Length: 62
Image (cartoon, rainbow, N blue to C red; front, side, top):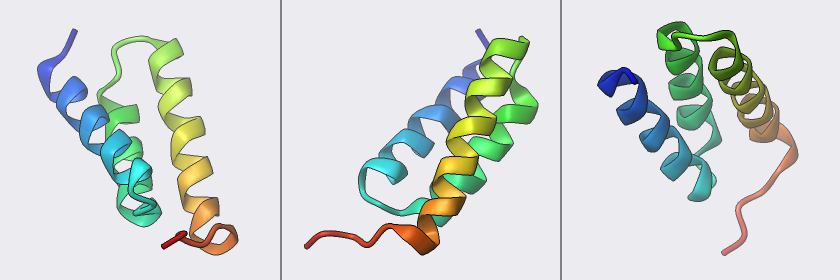
């Protein structure tokens, strides 16, 4: 598996965990273009959509 793809997806997951949805969405989009198969690309697209929609619909719990 592509090391850069794995690094970006790990970063995206961490950002998502900390409710940093804009940054996570951007990272998932980058990963989508680095994916070597359609299953991974589809997963990245879905995560990016979730994160970018969550910017407006989810609030960070303190």
